[in-house]
Image (tube, rainbow, N blue to C red):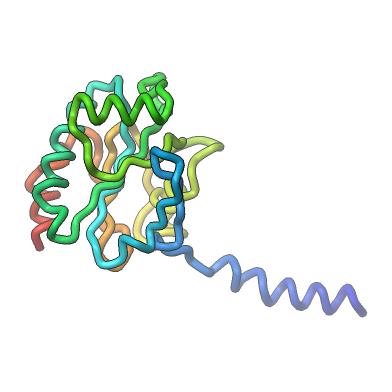
Length: 179
C-alpha cells in the first residue's frame, strides 16, 4: 500500500516539477571577482548576454560592446559578458587575467562574469536556459562560436540569438534596444 501511495505522489508531482520553467531572473552566477551576481537585479532592463574570448578573431567586438553599453546603459540596457574557453583554447586566462585584459585593451565597464562553459557536458545552467526551448520558451540554439549574443527582453524572455559575425552595434541590435 505504501508503494502505491509513493507512486501516486510521484506521478502527480514529477510533471509539475518538470513543467516549472526557470526564469532568466532566477539565476545567480559569480561575477569576474567571485561575487554573487543575481539576475533578478536586471528586471525591467533589456539584456545582451555574450560569451567572450581574449584570443579570438572576434575579440575586437569588445570595443563595440563597450560603446553600445556606454551609449544605452542609462536607458535600461545592460551587457553581461561570460568568458568561455570552449573554442580552440581562445580564452585560456584566469578571471583576473581576463579582467585585466578587458580593462587594459578595451576599457570594459559592463558586467563580466566568471569564466564558464557555454557548451558540452559542463555547460553552465544559464547557457542551458539560453539554448533550450523547453527552458526559455522561445528557441533551441547551439553556441557556435565566441561572441554569440542572446537578447533578453525587459520581462526576462529570450528574444533573439545574434551570431558572432554580426557586430553588437548592428542595425538589428540597435533598433531592438531603442524600441
